[in-house]
Amino acid sequence: MLIMYHTHTTEAFVLGSRDSGEANKYYFLLTRELGLVSAFAQGVRELKSKLRYSLAEFAYIKISLVRGKEKWRVTNVVALHELEGIGKSREKMKVTAKLAGLIRRLIGGEEEDTELFDEFIFSLKFLASHDLSIKSLHDYELLAVLRILDKLGYISPRENWLTMLGGGLWEGETLPNIEKEHKILLATVNESLYHSQL
Image (cartoon, rainbow, N blue to C red; front, top):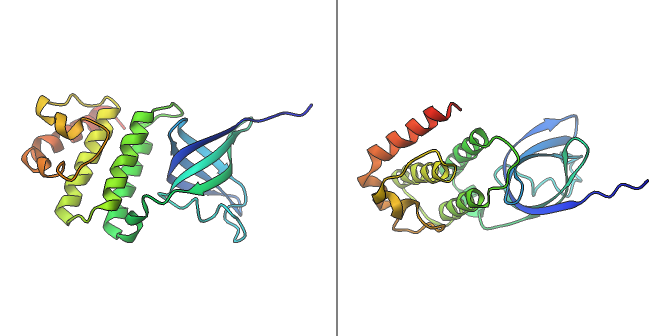
């Protein structure tokens, strides 16, 4: 009997990967429709692989996945280019790596959370499209972590934080507000991460 597998196509962000065998890889993906998934890409480390370059670390992609008996398999990838500005800066890449690591720690498994995905991608689009000083990068990282924790329900924000946490879009005026509340925001983030026990 012929078994038909349904193909799921969704936006995704590559949080990380690990090698499997001589030419394969597992990818840890934050997807818009499926949540956090681990997906297998066969032969992706071979030079002839069409998927090789689209599945780079911290890539923003549209990916097609098929659910097998035990795991997700990658069938197609299309690169989305809106975050390319991040790769041009070592400091931005460091911050992105930290945020990707945080997402992997905080999300337990496959569960759709479009609000979290959109927040994460909006924050990275802001990072990609703005020239930020080292200080502004630190403020950006703090705000990005705060907004991720807020979407996951880890914090109880104060009323005067609503402009920093409200809405889906990041704006250039958002970061200056961080300096006034920096100490309390940092303490809130650290306390939330401690109580998450992750």
